[in-house]
Image: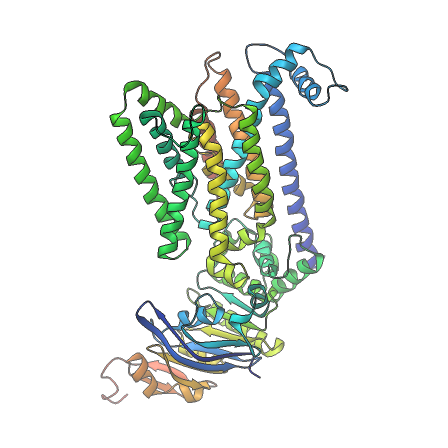
Length: 262
Length: 350
């Protein structure tokens, strides 16, 4: 059984249909990258999956159980979400921000076991030295890792991330993706993330789901999905996909230059 | 030493520092209450004032001169405690609003609740129309209009989709609308009525009585423990609606409930005091700079900072030009704003 499955999901903002008949499963231990141009519905899809938006039709199932029949706290123990812009409470320490991830399990007091889980997550994301610093004092990359640590202490089987590498330099992008890939492979977490960088997606995602105009254009391993035809149809660009590296590598080219003997 | 031990020890130290801060505020408040009770035309010492308070509470155990006990219990203590409760409530309401709306400028005043209360009071003063009669004409109107403003904000946000941005914009629209109505009433009112309206907007705890204190204390006792109980949800909402939802918080329901509680707190205080500005805005900021953003500490600590600030302001207002009493709203701003600016400029990441 898939850890997370989306079945024939559709959503519209008032009269404007944003998602149409989206269907895909995500297995435990899988990193699924949602890719597609701006406005194709990636963020809306993540919000529908997390239950922040109510789909007009279709279902989201977590371990076979339909999301809308589950209690909020139950969902929060099964699925975590990392937003694109993170860390509003800049006066809070890193430790407390991560501790908030225990909210689905806490009543009011914090046990020693909860604190230990926070320490372990901080350690894993190499944030130990920053634990007592305020979130407002951190760089973008550090904040993003704090948000992932918070999702981690939620101890969920699914983590959804909305463009976790936006605003990060290439080194931090790879750092974040390494962590997510490691979490999926070592802990069996199903990771679903919206990404703009196709090469980063190809390097770290087991499978890619290409969205175009609110529908699934293609779904499969990066080697199948990333090709010149898809880039032309979905993004409207000319590109060469190099296949002599470990993962397919997209090189966009200027319009018309391919005919000139690229 | 292992890093995990260092982190946990550091966090324990942080918790102790916060507890110490709250303890310090409580002690300072206890001292200030004693000092504030001595202020007035009849002169007695701080020790005598404590004794008079205790003698009233435990008549058999403690004894104080009759005059001191009468003055303290009949004239001064309710005013001092009213200032404490009002400061506490306004600061907590401000903390909640700033947190859930994620806007450092959110307060009962910037969101139009105080402005609506002023309109209610102005209608009572200028037109003599109101929901209650006699002594409660102005109070009843101010309370009703403050709640009306909260309902208007809620209605607009509900139509547009509950969220911090819609609530802030709806609040600002409400503030301008009610300010315009108040200006119109001032324009048509007589000179005496205009003076009464303006005086109401200065804010004052002059008219406190034991029954009024009882009402405010009852609302505080019913709402603040509940807010502290839901501190984790406030923490999550302060991180953003999406984060809160993913942490299992029922976002819309909670935002509405917290806004309504903050509005009720504000309404029940300012209907008796008039508009006492800055406490709801500044006290939460001052506290957040010192104890951080965790609402488990932030709520009680900012309440205590608000109480200290308002009681200090009222004490200064009563003594600086004695026997004349300055409006406390003016002194609050003179006292709170420089302190806030000092902290703002001298603390990192304020």
